[in-house]
Amino acid sequence: MEKLYALFGCPVHHSLSPLMHNDAFQHMNIAARYHAFHVEPKHLKDAINGVRALGISGLNVTIPHKTAVIPLLDDIDPAARRIGAVNTIVNENGRLIGYNTDGPGYVQALEEEVHIDIKGKRILVIGAGGAARGIYFSLVDKGAKQIDICNRTVSKAKQLIDECDAAVSSAACSLNEAEERLGEYDILINTTSVGMYPHMKEMPLSLANMKEGTVVSDIIYNPLETKWLKEARRRKAIVQNGVGMFVYQGALAFEKWTGAFPDVERMKKIVMEQLRR
Image (tube, rainbow, N blue to C red):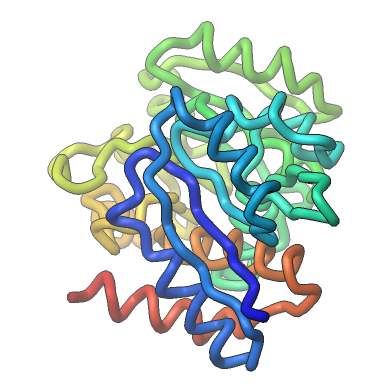
């Protein structure tokens, strides 16, 4: 019998996850299908009950459900609980277990695409939302020397650092303060939506004080190269877009559902081809 996997979000019409996962199922001869479901926040509880009732084997949850879904599950992986967000759920005989593959997916993509060892690096994270939180914890686990967070609202950056309470040197700062100190960092990571389609003329912060050879990473993948990444490339930085994070978080979710790790290069190729269209 064919297994069913799903994506719950609001909206989901733009998602490339069904294309990516269904190709992986077919390529690996796994009898399963993946469907995207538009779930309004007021219907999330009913939708999760439907997962149990219909025997859906696993699912992804995306904006705006990553936090709201937590009290509806039977158990939460310690890492996901620490992050405070779930993006992957596994149905184990009716018990729904929540995980977070966003942060680990981002770090795995960064290491493999940029060929960098995060241990001992000084890192600036731009933004203090859910994506920043997951990435922050994963960078801590990899042994980063310093992880500073800048945000338009500095108090939110400080709150993230205080709540994470991780064993790493961290400071909260404004965007202007970060711009002045940009040369101190080895890696810059934009976790905000600034520069994403259709607002493609915007940049999260100026790169005027960046040193050559800095890794500049943007979790946005539409457009494939934001104005910020173009500017970074012009200033001789090493750049990375958000395709890798999207693919690797999906691959890690796939592995949790099936026990098999998919061909990430194949997944990446499919996503890139679709985005280029």
